[in-house]
Amino acid sequence: MRTAEEEAALAVVDRMREGWNSLDGELILSLFHDDAVMQSMMKAPYNGKAEIKAMLDGFLGIATHVFQEVLNRRVEGNVVTLERRDHFTARGKSGILPCVGIFEVEDGKVRTWREYYDWGMYERQIAD
Image 1: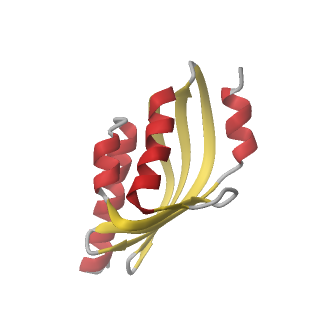
Image 2: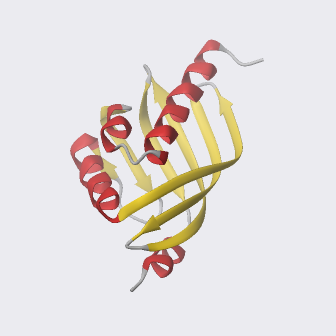
Image 3: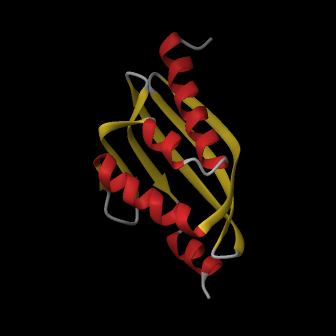
């Protein structure tokens, strides 16, 4: 049985997935703490909402479709792990990116989000 903390953490992450699936950058950004850290582990982290917003604006500027297919979802305390296949269309090209995201949720917002995926695979799928 899940604790109230675990249910709350899952709700935040599920709401963030809704934002990605609807390409709603404002919703996504609203679910981060002001000093949150988001990192695709093969790249430097985005520190704070301003850097996260710049990253979101860049991706959402080229994306016309995102669907996060959840394969496995786990929560322990305030930490949510999602194994996903992200289906996307960016720069007019469609792709699928397997990934794992680890979210640490505090006070109803994401404090840290670490993503593990093959950056080269993503780049090859959207290359001109």
